[in-house]
Image 1: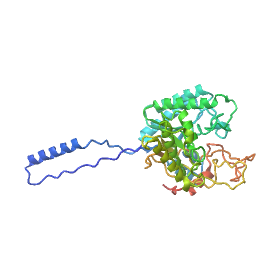
Image 2: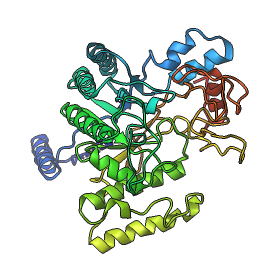
Image 3: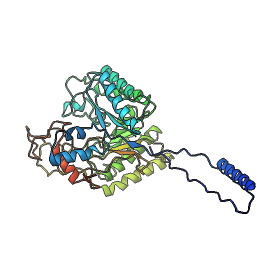
Image 4: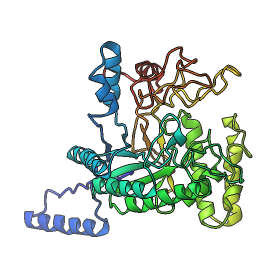
Length: 422
């Protein structure tokens, strides 16, 4: 993802008094010597991300007016992911192939989100997904067939490892997701098997980069995330994604990316049990990013004790969603909401860093706009009967629908600033 630059050419100056034949011979000899001594470099332009002219923002702009339309058009000009959800395998293959063809015509790499896992989102605002494992695997096979031999970045199932039916965390404590229709005895194991097989199918495509759900620092500690990623076949994937549809600041999420990569490396080497990986909670203080250096040092000690050296280039990498993290996470007033749902259309958030495959961070392959900024997270009742979102005083649109008020806020609070005229 970080192609090398062009090799600089070498100029040769021929003394004017040489006979022209001797001059030519000298030039050829020196040139041949130089070519033999310097390995040939392949000229390669940096990859660019695909801008889908049929994105949610572009479609919304067609029916909006005034400022709302201008906002949607501006957001539509920035590369963002294309999400694929409920459909038949045939429809999925055709839809993915259509994006791949249009991206290839522009020499660009698309970001494709596979979002069809059984019991998706634990029957909450984005509920849905394939009926069962067999149906899901057929859908993933069709998804992969749509990619074919082209280049693509696949974000495999947002929330897929953060919200697992009838799962127990790494300490053995039961988690709250228990959707109707899921088998309590086997649902968690089925989720890991589904994702593991999906990784194998997608990685069989020669140009496909696959990332699994690593959640984020406001969710799981690296220990639990690494344990889940390992069970879901991170060994065959390119890495993990973080902060999807979330709002964590760059300061937090980039540090967490390094810790999770280090934890995975130590676990894979047999040097550490996942449950022993340092985290944002210990020895660091989750509420004080300045104190996170203590966890950095704890990983230093873990590598030293194991006689290992970090190798971020070879370790598992992250892709990070920066679509809405410019103002960081929302801290609601204490005690105001029964369930603040801080992840759900929080007010006053901003666009984050623009999508890029050039990150200057050895742990991070890309900063992406995976969640399409401007699309709602859901009704967001915050512990009330609804339908009004008490933090906004209005009823928010269903998940995935365009939310002009939020799009305006994201632009107003963008960091770095976002110029809609460009």
